[in-house]
Image (tube, rainbow, N blue to C red):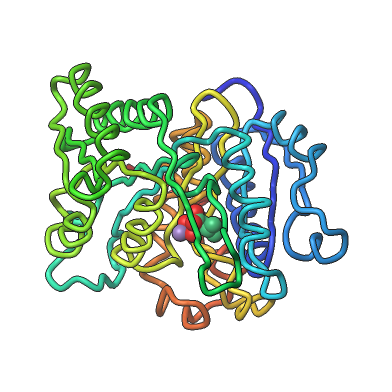
Length: 359
Ligand code: IPM
Ligand code: MN
């Protein structure tokens, strides 16, 4: 068990974020009592409401406080009354970039009893991890307009790929693949069209692969990856790709594992402060109704515990989630047969009962 106490900065955020984070924290309390872990929470009010009141997104003072924590637990960012881009760039992407969280780790894992949209595929077939580069590519906001609003308007949006940025995320993916069952890493790119960016990616991939002779290293175009994810997901173990492609294929991955109600991820800076979040958005339509599924946020907590040095507690949380899934009528918001809070209670109770601790 890790020695230093966990200090967690909690950003509930917008929409259904606060509701799902409350359930995650309920499960954290249960895990703390069962596994004897100590933690301290500090809450930060960031998101659409704060922006609408004060025009502040992520003040520097908050950012420097966040740097002092062991980890960040984030609900959701996004508000229907704020123009798209402002909160995403001003809070979510700024956190990822400023804290240099260069690995976006998104497991795609089908749990038993979860309805899968793929016929004939089960939990043994859908179990891989996408490593998405999280600080570069099309996301850096490089570009601009020329002659905006005229018939001659030009819009440029450039993908920035640095040797250092590409190499560090690829190396992380190889190290991860070494720990997984198939010992296989797939690079997803588009070397046939994006002949500069993915030339750099593929050359770097081949060079780093030499440090990992026991890992099978394959390259696939990302369009082919999206096809294989649907027809033969069992062929993947770890997929590493750039920021934009990673964004797209992880929503596809979320659909394979039962939808956004279950999809979670970590924005990791292996040498710094990491941030953990459910990957569905703020779902304003369901906000305040107690209808949203908190399991994704609870699984984000599981990834947090795993990466902060509490693997046993992480496994306990995962087992509790697995025990609760069959009790829900559906995983979709409003159709679970339970409220958001009740699902949190079920998981916290499952965590505390002996049954789920066995194994
Ligand atoms: C995600 C989201 C974000 C992204 C948006 C909200 C900026 O879609 O975390 O996948 O594109 O990274
Ligand atoms: Mn996305």
